[in-house]
Image 1 (cartoon, rainbow, N blue to C red):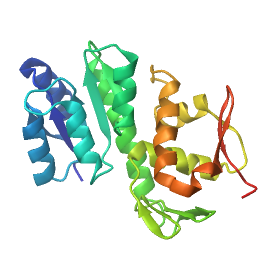
Image 2: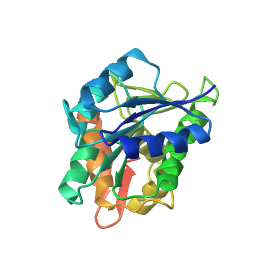
Image 3: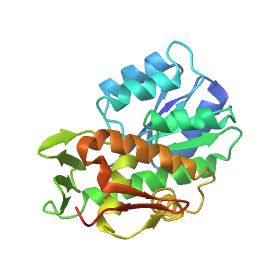
Length: 227
């Protein structure tokens, strides 16, 4: 089935370049020139991935990301001309899955999008009986759903991937580098501190189960197997 990419970018030339790269790879592309239009297209269509600029008219990219994350874990790649690390971390705090700073190479953007889509497709084609459970947390991998003590929890794509990897390696220290390689791959050029941000968000969503994720100073994280 053809995947649909929503490109929310107010620069017409850049938006056209991005569209052409995705269309040439066989994707369907929806285009929005501002945040308000982007939200409308997302609500009215089945979207598989969003390429989202930050500096948008009507509704900025951060606000768009925040609203979408209230109801969906669709992968989001944010675009920005800013280079401030705080802006990058804010994007991740709001639930973005990847971050690309302008100017950038469209093939690199395409490669990152493919990785997110391929990883998601791999998870959904696994056995419908596949689950990972521990200490009151139950993850159903094909449907990408999670319950904490029987209550549903809404994780972003990246948060789900991080928790799944930690659960599979329960009791073993997982380095930040390992998490980056697992989720973003070799082409990732961001700061390892972005992992810290995702872990912080994940802990908040796990509530009283958050303590099961232990921080290993200057190394990474692990699921406490003694609980």
